[in-house]
Length: 156
Image (cartoon, rainbow, N blue to C red):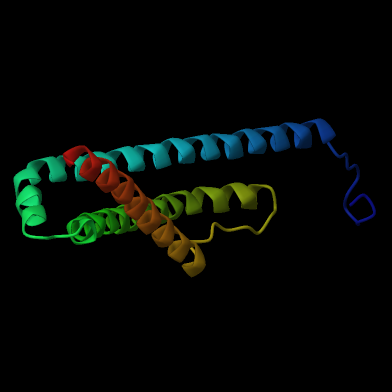
């Protein structure tokens, strides 16, 4: 940089770069911690919803068992409910992420241009959106499966 015409003095501030890397690492760890808390919350919410739904239909489940319904037949509607809840949650999360990125994009562009860098905030890539949907469906199904297994055992 110092060799370019018009540049009188250039200095690399390593302390500033180290602080920036530390802040970036802190933000990354914060995102991971918040993500773990949100996964636990999703499992608890979906599991509790399924548990309450089974408790509400306890008599119908008992009658269905008396006429020969298998646990798989009883389990199926609750697994669908968990799948739909996971899918809906993932869609809402994707919309929120897209809205936040759209909101922050002008600020990030202005900040990068103040440093002479041409950078822009990209939206949610299709692969990332698909991964978010898959994670939501998996969490919903997993929570529903655990709740149904637990509740059906308690009905026996």
